[in-house]
Image (cartoon, rainbow, N blue to C red; front, side, top):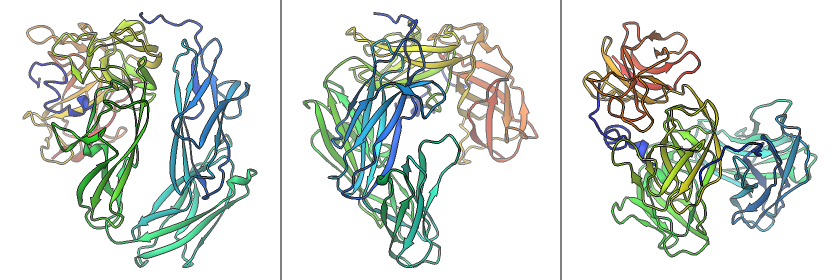
Length: 569
């Protein structure tokens, strides 16, 4: 049934789960408040150079019991201040009757042209669930200056709090510039616009100028003129992903080590072939090539005092806009209790915030100061409930751990976790315990990882190892729920000659379109022998399955998995 015996993250990761690794007890709180924000992002807000941006408001409300006692703090963005207003009738949500307005003042008059990001942390009392949370505020100051390719388009997002009317002008008189509103609706309090730059295919390379002027808003500072410069080129255009890096580490944290790619990678938004050259790091000894693997970046807080440290990653290339520089901001804070991010408990495959996990699922929790030990992996089965000095509590019960690190821990949801909203905390071996966050737990939340062919190769979308009709393939994944016989969380699943642990609910495998594809029942669906929390589905590819690059998914009566692609010839 595939895979030799071993601990998840050792046997599995060496074959196909590299992404899995690369990266006082809880009392159930009765009558506890629960923090909710109507929005966790503000902007990007367009502001002319030297002008002041309009004030912003984000509403908070209590989705639990009791009452909220909120406070706000701002990161290193000196242009941003925040305060909590008096309770009032909610204006931007129907989820609650009363809201607390978080009032954001933006002092941008002294900012040079560029993009600025600030973070507001919204805290509450120690018994408040899903607190603290953050609001990210982005400002786009000054003119827009972009590179574009003939026949392609570029979009620059901006937001307003009111509908505006746009007047677009270009120096050459061609209609390559516009302001586009994304989405409409009667219940809207933020209006997402795009400055849309769309040169025609027959335009000649060169520099083109224009402007977008907005009017009609009742807030005068939202009526602005934004100069736009377009550099039209047939060369490659490099775009960094991400275009900025913001990190926060506590004093005493172990170094974080990243590969240059994907911490920063370049994609080509232009024509031709993009080739990269040398990468240069600047900012101080805290950002440097890793001593063990020089192609990796080490972020090392050793010796740094609380405060901000700025640096950059610069990548040379043959692009028209080379070199590409990505600013890096490292904030050092004092050592404190573990901090879990809001919606920071995620399934370990798709990792979509807010998605449910299943009983017995393999999940991750993200946060800060979760462990001060280096990355630590469970050595064997059964999985331990304490690893790297950290313990995860799910509704007060210690959960089995696959690995632990400073900012992320992988664990298994106990099978006996009640369906509904579960409470999660992290406790360190120094006695410090985190805030409480929630995650929705359901019976089934299937997620597919990979597909193994009949010849034990893995079926990849590149077509290097296709399958054929009549082959038996094995699907591996997480989140398929209870089995018979039942297996304790953290324990390896039984292997022959013992009875295999099969799932207890009917499952369908779909090849192709979810409505009109080929549906079939698997020969086996259950836990992979000798592994904890890993499921496999053995299925014969039906004769009526499509050929080529084929979508593959599985489904229970109430839910369906993510879709992955395989090749059938």
